[in-house]
Amino acid sequence: MHRAVEPPFVAGIAPWPDDAESPVCLMIDDFTDGWIDEDGSGRPLGRNDWGAGLDAPGSSFRFLADGLLSEFPEIRTTFFVPVARVEDVRPPRFPLAFRPIDERPEFVAFLRRLDADPRFELAYHGKEHGRPGPSASDYLPEFELYGSVAEAVSALRAGEQIWKGALGRRPEGGKYPAYATGLHGDEAVDVAGYTWWCRQWDAGLASGDDPVLGAPRFFGPSGVVDLPSTVNGGALTLPPLIRTPRHQLEDWIGMRLLGRRRLDAQLDRLLAARAVISVQEHITSSRPDGDTQRPNLYDDVASLRHVFARLRTRRVWHATCGEIVAYFRSREATRVRALSGGRLEVQRTPGEPSHAPLSLILRGPRLADAFALHGPEGAVAVRVSRRVGDTCVTAPVRLAAGVHRLGA
Image: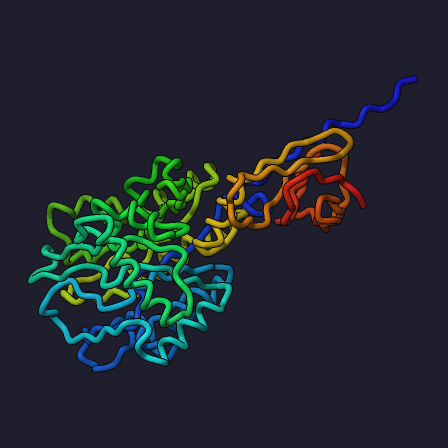
């Protein structure tokens, strides 16, 4: 008589929570306490508003909330905040008003409400964004101005003081203004102690064929996470035909005919690669030089609705940039291996400061929808969130390093 052999028990970590195909985040740049009187109304509302209108009716934030988030409440948004004045030409074409984000009590209170809301995240986007010139072509993004690492770090520290004045803490992540690193940006960001940073425009419609560009990666001695920027939120937004130069007409017609197909194909490639889908936008279309900022929320609502409607049909995880980074860091610092007797061992990279809950992939004896893992810190309740054949995926769970035993 032969005893039944228990199927092999295999343990692993899901690439993303609940084994989602990809994480998804809406990234909105240049959100700050400023406005440009582009329409002569004398009010920080509509396209004039870079954030100074708070959440009042007619503000850019209210436009976002009513025009997109009400239809897609699953969206998680990271706002990238320049902390002081923003200009790209001097003198500007229109009257403008920009304040440091810690100056006006109403704006500080607004930022703190956003900071406390799990749907939103605030991240650093430079102190003054750059140095203006007599024309937009003379503008230099902020990190291209610094002649040394020390100078770049000093500027980061000065901006952080303004940030702390508004929010009572230092920022954890950020993005280079105009995705311009300069000669010393990466080293300065590492020295300044940031957890994550958006370093470059990784892939838009024209350069989205390489899904590897959608994978987070580490840079610098401290292991800052470079979070990729992968999808142009205005991919389906075209400039008015009347303003299109004759030599670009063929491109305009091609984009009109093929834009949706290209965008859908890019999203499919990113999903197939389990890559980050980070949708790039600006809070508004107005600029001090009178040109149109692209991409921007006002012109791109239809394009954004298409993106998020398509993603709604897929198994994705909506998260802020910081949440994506936290899972990635924890995943990369953790190893799980199967042991005999329904046990598994969790190993962690020494020195990693914190660990986000991770989804486990378990294959072997059929598990109940809810069970416990008994480990160094006692029993931990685990819930199965997905099953495929004899494989189950758990909801994210926080496990201490050491050996854990499957139990009831």
